[in-house]
Image (cartoon, rainbow, N blue to C red; front, top):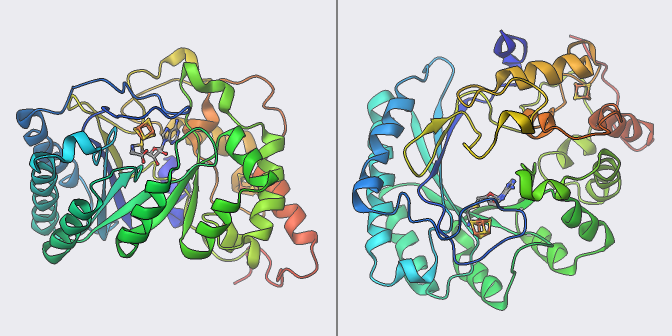
Length: 354
Ligand SMILES: C[S@@+](CC[C@H](N)C(=O)[O-])C[C@H]1O[C@@H](n2cnc3c(N)ncnc32)[C@H](O)[C@@H]1O
Ligand code: SF4
Ligand code: SF4
């Protein structure tokens, strides 16, 4: 039902977030992973993932979907202690090739994105592996960058220079501290912005990190001031440059045609078992969070909003987090309203015009 309401905003790709394991050798302030966990790291557990990927891909409708994106994540998959003898890289290779084969079987194009903190020292090994992989598959890196809450070292920039051709985009998590830091000025970010596509990702809290949720006021300030001066910033920047109300834009998040596979093999829509009903304002189902989107659309009266076509909406799960004081109204609407008031913007077309 909700899917029908937003059908023109649905993208033509499906997304599988495959978290192989939570293990990581650093500790970012906003990340809820169990950094010492070994779950999912054994040969058997890693081999068990391809059938789960297949089980999801075979549910996809080729009339709706053209390609499938596999987001291969940890924990940190490229931490030095796992790179030592090449064993883990070999397991990742098997999973990526199995994924390609599954997509081929069902007639979908396949793309893999490996998400990394880019802090490894064994950069020649990783660079060579990516080169070899791309001779037989299509695999890119999504590199995380955050102005606060994660280590960004000299090694990070050295690695970025080396693997640059494999990088699809950088990812920034929208915590209140990072948004504030960006607004106050982050010279390292500015340099990266000149050279890479950068995506601002919704922050999904857990109980221990909910203090990092940005207020609606801060988010709006960020959209108005920072996105206004960084028109290439995804997903909002391109919308800010030219507001054409008649043009349908995709959602900024993948709720439909999305599957999350957890280290122990559990398949969910998006959320983890550590996310409980008490955290959310609406009924929680790990299998399907479309009711969160229905609540979002209803709360903001999106279907009768003049910006509905161009609006990327908000991640409905992050929005559904139980948080007092969410009576601001719609941040996106306030952003679009203020952007339209600027005379330099092209607002020639009105919503609903043929
Ligand atoms: C959990 S990390 C795993 C990959 C890798 N270790 C890294 O940091 O890029 C996957 C992605 O989720 C992001 N992330 C971590 N904690 C998050 C949170 N609470 N909400 C939203 N994104 C988060 C990271 O910045 C990264 O882009
Ligand atoms: S590097 Fe990635 S997995 Fe490790 S703590 Fe940071 S966000 Fe979490
Ligand atoms: S601007 Fe707000 S009310 Fe309008 S469609 Fe977007 S989220 Fe909904």
